[in-house]
Length: 279
Image (cartoon, rainbow, N blue to C red):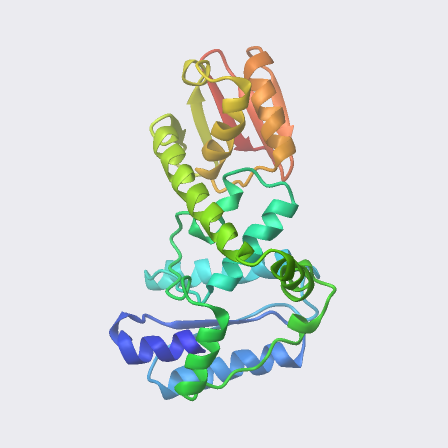
């Protein structure tokens, strides 16, 4: 809602539409979507409302994010716009710490600093600063009740872990931000190296890399190169898949294949590796 009012004040002509999604998780989600629609209409913006199933498909935050992301992509396809979100610096700190705890590779540690088609105007602002701005402009909002639930990993990181670390290690959040910035720059440099090597198919569902192009890399280097290749077709590889892909590159023979999670596989011909969906 703060972002909505900021665009209304600073760049109203840049707004193609205000998109809001009701996840179907209960009355609060529906009230929130309805409030966004009413406020956007009052400010003179067209509104697109998406509604998930009730009860929602899946009960995890990841499933809800995926449903929302699919809705937003459909809106951008129709409008020709790009997505702008209100993620803050605090969101970035939480995301990076969560990825550290999940043993993410350097690519994942970039968090919200990774190159993306989504713009995040508040990413250098603290959550408290955004809330203060919302109060100043008279924005209304509905508080998501799941933000208070310790069932969710992010809430435990936000409410328990980060405050505990800050008490014994002041400035820890700044260190995470610095780590993310370095990881973001490293990721961009690696993507620039991989882009000319990885040829995406016309359907966007597979990517080809010449065997000779990967032969120059060690197994350790391939553990960084393969996630960059996979990202070309929208696949985020976990560390197990990354290690298996690196080993397959060095040890496979023509005509062999290796399956990855999520319905993906890598196949090898005489001249190329292909990463593709097999189901």
